[in-house]
Image (cartoon, rainbow, N blue to C red):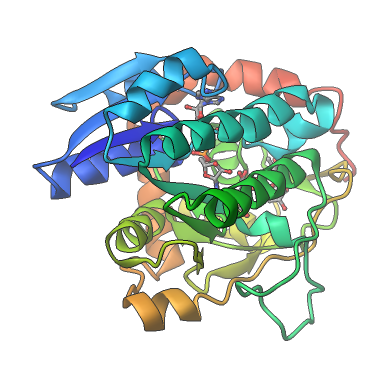
Length: 333
Ligand code: NAD
Ligand code: DAU
């Protein structure tokens, strides 16, 4: 199988490439990545037989010939960070909407199978005490520039399936954690701040809930959908990992030998979604997927160990990431 992986130098995409190289020796992998601040050559280091092309998914002249020679396109590339989308939404509109449109036109032209990676944030948020979780039938209600551009990209895919017969599947996954995640994101930010002797930064009251899944479980689910998913269908990916941000910070502090209250509350994120929760029944019952890393505590400990052992990977990004936060986030207690 000839695979084109967009965004393969980012967090989830690079883990997908590693997993695929390990488990599927017969796959030819091409990565298309613009190497924005979030793309990292070091995330693909040591991999055999991976062709890496530096280019923009919104550039049809780059995209078209690469799609033409692929059997399957897996589309991870995106601007992915909510805080950045509040600061400047424009690259989110270009990459997430125009980039996805450009890929869809290419897979339509060349009749190539396409899998679209998306997020549970398209559904908006839930109250803390809501008994409902998101399902494939939940109405779209995105809150941020990031999630609204992801929602728009999903709708483009659905329209290209219905109007043009594009052979596409979609998945919407909850919050991923694991190795090679950018230090701007919640869990790596706290781990690397503690490694630097600082205190974790918790937005608002810290009671917001995210539904955590190990990145390899996400990527195995993506392969399950590519192998056995029904064209035109959406599958929600989640591993029943709901936890408050406060609980995660305390877990990190405990694993790293620090006191449970050794953190700062800082200014809340504007429009901050309260809670995400995924019901992945369809994926489990129709396609037979189950998570292999359901224990968040041991997955988190392994992730802390990875950041401890891989300072050369994250160190070059740390100061710039903290610089972007400086000034926006005032310590409240
Ligand atoms: P990331 O920010 O770590 O990586 C994104 C990658 O896309 C980077 O390598 C970047 O260089 C590349 N990229 C950005 N703009 C590009 C462009 N115009 N052309 C080509 N490449 C470009 O993101 P991530 O966390 O790995 O997320 C990957 C995908 O998974 C995204 O579509 C995101 O919406 C989705 N997702 C993420 C999570 C999560 O928890 N991180 C959960 C669900 C879904
Ligand atoms: O739900 C899937 C989404 O998960 C993906 O679509 C996004 O690409 C991914 O970035 C992630 O979005 P979140 O906004 O949930 O992730 P983030 O890591 O930015 O923040 C997680 C939670 O932690 C959120 O409630 C905000 C909070 N937070 C974040 C940071 C960076 C803090 O309390 N302190 C922080 O320093």
